[in-house]
Length: 256
Image (cartoon, rainbow, N blue to C red; front, top):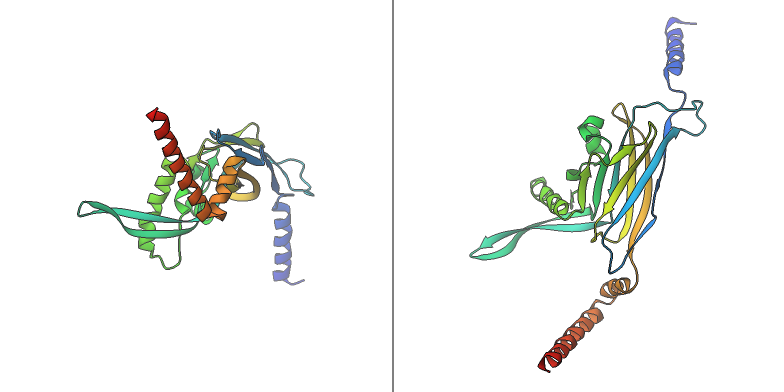
């Protein structure tokens, strides 16, 4: 056997001994698969919990950390237009605007430590985890306009409580069991939500898991929402008639 071939086989043998006997996987679940919105809805809190286990079929019977967890919760995606108002001769007018595509209507990041302590900025940017990475400008928008309007759009979403970063949001109850709580505000947008969990070890992503849940309106609120979208003209006429009737009724009552 030649020298180079012998050296190559030896390297492969050593690599086989050095590689781990198995890999980790995430087993996770959401406490509720559906959140119902009624007229008295004041928000809701969901619990995400999970465990770190050896990969199915792996030879190893246990896993060894330390581990870190980052969870992103993304609400329904939509196109959003950010506008700039300026004072033109005493009148505030929209003078510039930028459209962003696939923009989350809700976005929350939860972790068990500071993001900068878990991994490097490049990995975070590649996964589009930071709040600032959510705006994606529509085709044709210059990077200058996107860079000017994007952070302001994120700031407005943070002020509304729809965007949030909680670097103490994930709690480890043991070396391998964790949980996190996601707070939905009273004006949480209806639609599908995705909770994506990243498992980190030594700064690298070693496993991922996605869990979904939905937020939807029920009862009379659902009827109004469907009517407004499916029959906008009829819905508008009914609202005008109701407003006129309410005004007339109020005048009759107070006249007496």
